[in-house]
Image 1 (cartoon, rainbow, N blue to C red):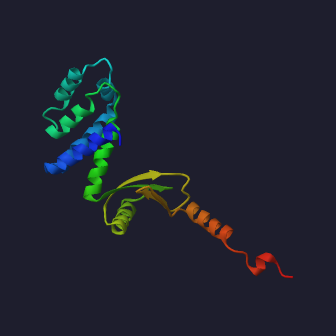
Image 2: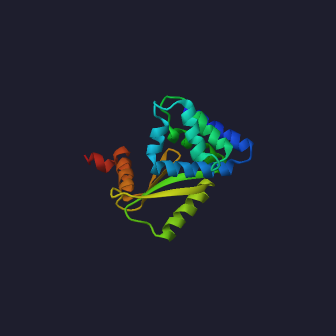
Image 3: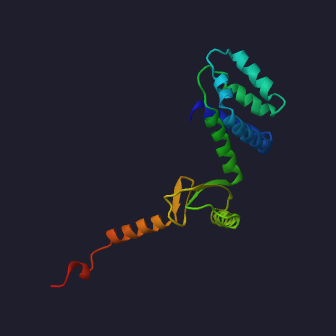
Length: 186
């Protein structure tokens, strides 16, 4: 585990111990979205021209009073080194631990066309019933999916698309043993 992931996991453990896990989750999620829209801020924090006290001062001015002290201190530890560090790795490690703790499952679903709200809700409910977890779903339009759906979670891919069905059928045909008719009649 690298340093950033270790700090993210450490924040998770500390927030859990202090009973502020949900608030820390909200703050890290908000920071992640905000920093994704303002990547130049992270470039400034990682600048080799900033001293450690300058880095800490920037974090205090920007986030002090806006995030809980545990989150602020984790950010200070993350950026105290002059080496380049990754907020993405840090936040992903924290969010992954949180979601595992809370039974949250992130699902990526691919469809040839946009799903209606009813279809999206039905898919989400089916996945929640199947997995026993709360599903957060990202929907993508993929022209390669001719029909049906393909979705992935927990490093597994479930292909219910037409293409997936045809590939499965091909594998069945190619892998099946020869019958008498296939060999011909003597």
